[in-house]
Length: 200
Image (cartoon, rainbow, N blue to C red; front, side, top):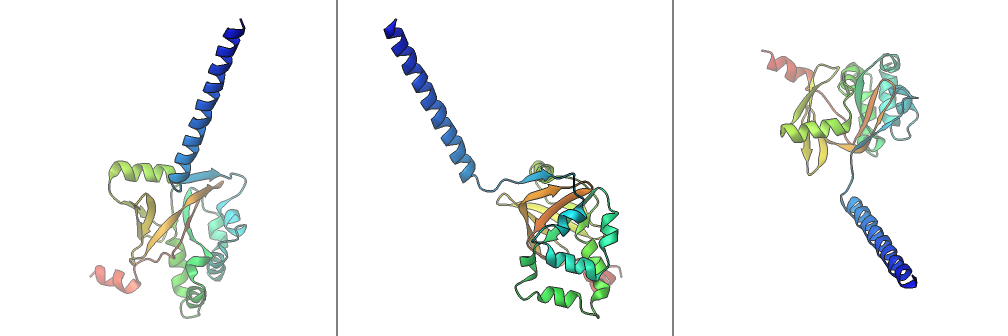
């Protein structure tokens, strides 16, 4: 009887060891895999509330305020917004001063709308579609221009019409009326002059 108990105890100890090693292996694999894209749910807040309550979107909100764009964002539904962080505007905030200058304000609504897409596709679905399709995905913005999404070294990238390539952060937030994606560059549509020339 005692021999049976000893054998059973040994089997249980070995099982615990195997399970423990398995957990460590899984943890190590997850840690070395790098950043994983995911969308967190926050249906208690709207897109505007998420932007307003975040510490990293202050510069973007200054542009929204300069263009009196707050009310329009509040009324939006089923949208994606690609939001540049404060760092995306540069340490001197030259971009903010340039865009909010009196002679530049006319461009501001178009630039802001270029960051919005009528869709509620989460990042997991975007990446799956890109992997299956094997080619960049075009998204039409509220401005009317297009953004191109693609994968580079397992990172989600956005190419705008001005040639800027932005990287999408691994964490996005789905609010009550849309999804907020964080990016590291300011997106700009094709200039009005180029658009005019292209239609001739």
